[in-house]
Image (cartoon, rainbow, N blue to C red):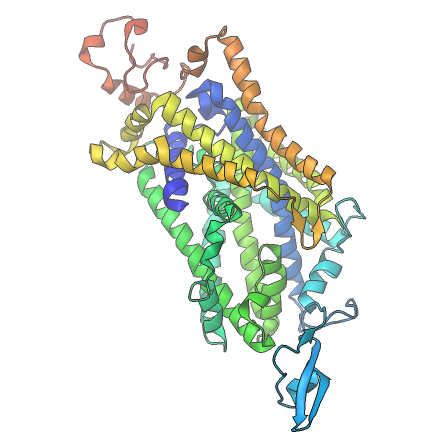
Length: 560
């Protein structure tokens, strides 16, 4: 997914954002009929930023909870029920003597160094302390989406703090957030190295690594559509492709910045970091499986279960566990803030493109208003049913809508505007390249990436199943809300397209042409673009000049 979708889209978005110095909505001056795709990107980013900061709030809560000599989820304390247990509960038949076989609890069998007779073990239903702490204390989870309950006040305060941090980092826009990320981007590497070194020295670490990427890996999962959709979503989420964030951030680049080198370095480093992080995580999970005498798959979880149940449980078994817990959740906090900065910057950049004068004078009040509004919308996610809403938004908005936006982005830029014209624009920034250099990019932009993403989109829609959180299935009305969220984001694509066609008096071709103000933002760079005009066109009226390197319909003042 990185090679066929992530990297091609990353390079495309970095290039088009840097070339035009515009955000994800205004950049569609390149193909006005597709401007709705930019609106879709911003709306998806807005919805995801609501619940994403809730996850940051969870990290803040656990980080503060780590400031105790004994971690509150390390054992079954007064908040636990009778199912809570640090060890596996059950019974089995065991041979006491040559003539005596009896039914005994697993704890007794273990204490007496005996072995259960094969196929006689019956396990009782039990929960780890970390799981009950997550559900009963942190979330105060209700029975379903329809049982909203009250607002969990300490999560609401953590959510407020998360938005204050985001607002403070972005109050001067890219100038302030660009300095903050020097720390938030580097610090996780320090923590990952510390966790990996510590994890590698623990008993059972090899079994965890072997399950993660070794002989115990389950490659049959590659036959499931959901895995491919998740792979695409993860690549798009971690690289920020098709979210609008790359276009927004690259719009602040210098015009001649080597965006090709940036794309290669960022994409490779990003995925290498993900693989590296897996070693740090699974080495400690392997130790947890060793201590609890369970197979590694039985202690591994995904999503929220990995971050807030399985890994905290593993950390609670280490010496000086509060220190490791604090480092881990502080790392999650910094990782989350990086992504959140990009999402909010996407929103504010779009506002700035639409209202430049207002944004220039009142950036701080608008940023505060934006963060306040999103905080209020996020309060539903810190109710007792909040985790269901978080999961619902993630399930619908973080997957299909992103794939739709990505496919249409490729179609608009490469098929309608023209990949050859787009390549000429890129070469203005990074210099002329040999024709063979572009073979792979042309293949991906024209065919491989859109076909692959369309196939994954259709495959996952055909195999759609009702979402669930744990054993709790979502009601029909909840699923309908999820589809409405996707519909609300995607609906702007046909609406804007129709409006553009109407304004062009029904001329679809005219509505698809780049606008007169499409191109580099600065006059000296616009002048560079006219160096592509052949001598035969000089002295002619601009209407008579043929389309050269995407020049048609462009603001021609510099050339004149």
